[in-house]
Image (cartoon, rainbow, N blue to C red; front, side):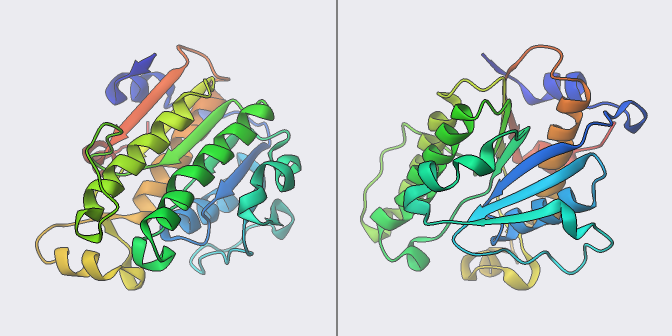
Length: 251
């Protein structure tokens, strides 16, 4: 069952005084990207998380602003993403949450099909691997307006529609696994600082984006609070829309 964000924020976000002392294990996919890198850094400096495994094509650098973390917490699992299920299965074992921030652009990927491979097929493979490993929580970074029923075409002029549809299909792929708890974050325009994409720079004059650090903060705090409550309350799907991400306040 899918629940509204406001209800679940009240239900799962708890005071730091009640935080669980368990050393939680996280798996992060997409850590070389802007949001994924911030998730990685915030997990490493958060004492609730004792083990962080980055799964990807290459090792991901930790953003330099995150300091004082224990290097023993961080592991890298470098794999061929086309063989995620077989090569990364050990990384998912014992994980409490999988944070999935996989995403690319059509220009970077080279084609509509290559874009869909990253933003949909790799996400689906990650969700299936997490479910196989009995992970209780899957946190997906999606996008504002994601809609699996959107009409779309592989034509470059219609890529914005394909993007929205692909993100929606990725959400459905994750939800279909039936995790005890699923979080879907739908940020709008991202404020990446020096890493901003061309389109984001253009629209930044008109619209104020949400900082990637804020998106990561919501993802990490949502998961930490869920585990602090020992998974109590109604399990289900939590969708955090852009406005809620911007206005998020920790309990």
